Structure formats: structure tokens, C-alpha cells
Amino acid sequence: MSISKFDIADYLDSKEMIAEYLNTVLEEGDNDDVITAIGHIAKAIGMTKIAEETGLSRPSLYKALSNGAKPQFATIMKVLRAIGGQIQVNPISA
Image 1 (cartoon, rainbow, N blue to C red):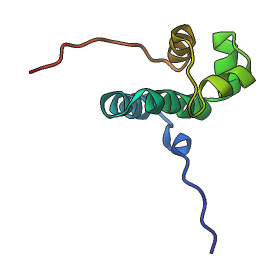
Image 2: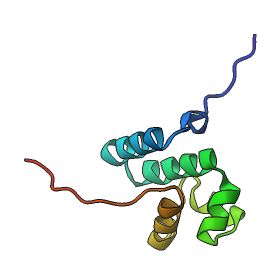
Image 3: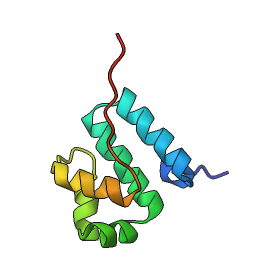
């Protein structure tokens, strides 16, 4: 019996699933969690495709979206656009 390693990217197979995952991480996670989640989404879509759409190299993407990375905000925005996402601000209810 072999056990395979769980990879969330294997389950991010629709825009709805991607949005739900990222929104949950944005709500419950910290900065590192958000960067890691964006990396999972980029992997699910395909790093080559994301690299082409952002103008960044694949190695740069892997580095920017790895654990402990501190990517520039412009990089995060480019990747968000490439994965079909956007940032939206809603008022926090009391």
C-alpha cells in the first residue's frame, strides 16, 4: 500500500474552487499563507502559462511564491490577474 502526498493544486480545477480557496485563505490565513495559496493556484493552472501572462520567468515565480518569500506587491498583482483574480475591499462588519 502506497500513500501519496496531498497536493491542493490537484483539486483547484475550476474558477469557483480557486476563488473559494483563495478567499478562505485571505480570511483565515496570514501573509505567508496567502502567498503559498497563490503559488498553489499558479501551479494548478500551470507555471508556464502564468509566467507567459505575467512576463516573469518560471524560476522567478517559484521563488516569489515559495514558503517564506516576500514578493513585491506588483508581482502578486501580476499573478492575481494571470490566475483570474482581483482584490476587492469590503467593509468589515462590527
